[in-house]
Image (cartoon, rainbow, N blue to C red; front, top):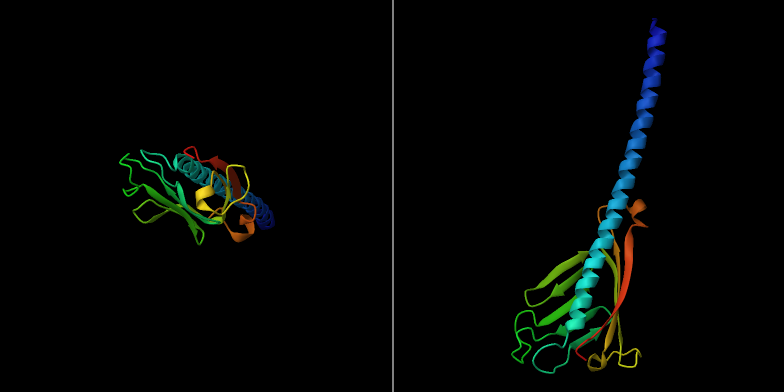
Length: 175
């Protein structure tokens, strides 16, 4: 074995190892993007399920009262008489959902707690009993929620397709 044979074999080995590392890095990047996409979808689904459940329960309790007091495009205030005392004043009986920057927050009396990070769109559309659009909180009978999320922690070049757009319509049961 000569020195030139050794140098050629080391060069070929270097090329093979370089190609293996490039392939490994691309695989790790693809995994990170897929995991971020799943995380964004799961967080969005969980938030949408929670919000739609609270929308359906709004107005429930011992007495009749307005289930919605604020009906804005990016904020809603709901009321539920959880303890059945006829007054909406206890903890967790007035619930506010709003978008603050890129964080969807829920405030039920203990401060606006974060629900989902990386929200790019949070839209609320309200409908009356006949299904017509309305902005009057007293006339709201159904709410269509659109939530778009993006993944945090993914490089910007890879993040353009990472996220989810989810939508649902919830009817207020107690109206």
